[in-house]
Length: 194
Image (tube, rainbow, N blue to C red; front, side, top):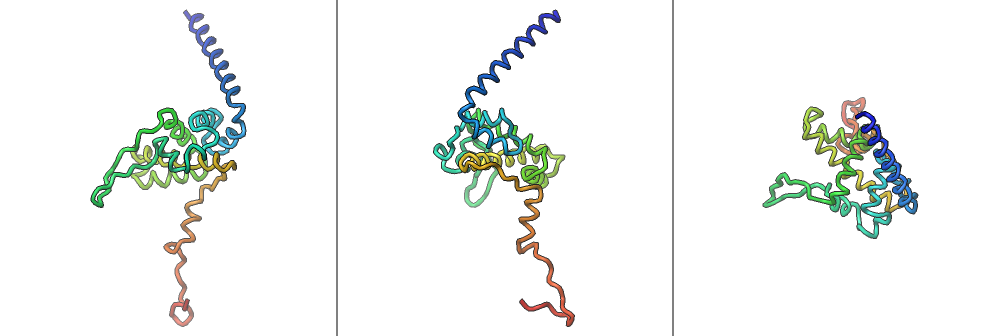
């Protein structure tokens, strides 16, 4: 009985090796694009192959901008507004083959330090914290959307991903007017003139 199971496992391993070899042979013309996609955090060789097989290597000719790619994949934010009232809406049904790919890549990306993890943390805290499963699911979809935007720009521009870093949001908010340093009082007890 054990020999039967071991033979079956050996057969499945041989089939997986055959499929991996076929995938590598089919990805040979797209090796440069695949290498560019692997510079994005959370995207490995298999994920890059899945993205290229669904949207192609010349994405700018197929989709005019990143918003169209996110909409086509089905990870764009919903918009249900009537009479000035915004209601919750479900995300749209997109490509059933492409939609789970950035979601799984987002789950991998939020485990590493960087911009995508900071984005995830920011939105989890916005919707209820880490104890809320709904907050984590919404934040993963936002990270998946951000990853599709990054994928479009990497493929359209032909440049590797430039990591913004964990402190991107703090650096961005430091320069704004609402986080400007408090004015100091002069020796006479009045505020300095601008």
